[in-house]
Image 1 (tube, rainbow, N blue to C red):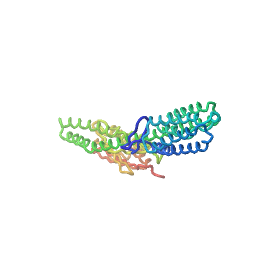
Image 2: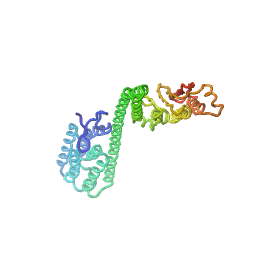
Image 3: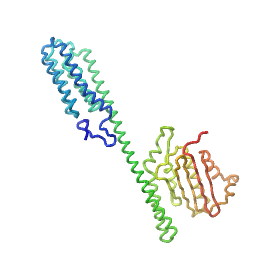
Image 4: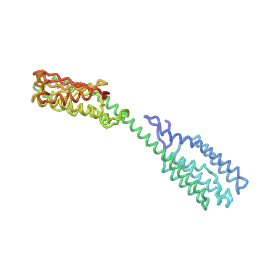
Amino acid sequence: MNRRGALFGVTYRSVRTGRSEPVIVEAFSRGLDWFRPAAALYAGTVVWGRHDTMARPWVGFTVIGILMAFSLILLVFRRRTTWLLAIEVALAVGGIFATLLADHPEDVAAGQFTLPTIWAAGCVSGAAVLHGRLGGFLVAAVIAVADLVEVGSPTPTTWHNILLLFMLGVLIGLAVDLARGGLQRYEQVLAERERLRERERLARVVHDGVLQTLAFIHRRGDQIGGEGAELGALAAEQERTLRRLVSQDVTGSRLAGKLDAAAGEVRRDLRLLLGAHEGERVSVSLPGGPVPFEDARASELDAAVVAALDNVNRHAGDDAKAWLLLEDHGDTVSVTVRDNGIGDEPAHLLSAASRGRLGVSQSIVGRVRDLGGTADVITRPGGGCRVVITVPREKPHD
């Protein structure tokens, strides 16, 4: 299994993203692998350029050889741990103090380059990549203390280099922390998406099997009567409970508060709105998947359905029951509210508005018309009433 170093050990490659570290972290790590030998080569050229003025040039060349060997080892050995980082910091600090042996005291006091020169910045960057901004800050502090001790009396150049070290460690560490946090959140999103897909699959299985079986038991129990009717009533209650549990899934909850990126509109799941009307006298049938609808339009559609159910309670009779069916046709959705009440004469229903009864004409038909849809009311004496509402999913353009 492919591994990359992180913190005090290693992390395994994610099965979801196929990554063990963010892209930027891996890029930093690869860049540092090539920076170290390049920095050691630069330090070697600096030592060679002034070896004739050094007190002990062999110390300088020995230090450069050790730094180059370690850099080449890290170029081949890909695993990064805190122990390797500690060795790298120790070599950088040792190289800084070895400057006191290699150079004359007056050259050191004048602010002569240390033997590692920019190679020491590599361990600050490495700490930032491994441990984030805290690691970069701490290692920068260690290198800064070593520089101050080595020079004795700090020069403006010394303070300038120390400031650059802290900026380097903190800024790279901050970028690494943000990248790792982003990758972690992305992992959580993928895990949530997998969980939602599984829950939707189970919801479809339940909807296509268990719920239909319970509905069949309910109908047959009513037809048989007696103890069969009692069994049917129990099945109906369990069907309502299970349907409510299936419909109120996480997908619907997220859709209820999710901002649609394209339209900039909040969308809600119609199943959650209409499923809340289920009760002892109202049976609700809903699709297995979410039915997203723009928030304001969903509220208006729900208000029209509430008006239709209110008519059932008021005018269908005390023993009347209602059935609510939601269907998703892609570009449109339809809601059917039907009852087994006493019904009414169609002419009497059409003249209700002239008598000041605005429940159907305004609360139902008017609302649906404003949504760009249609509402058909079908009724006859003794045959109950059926209201079929069809609304386009998107708001029609004027």
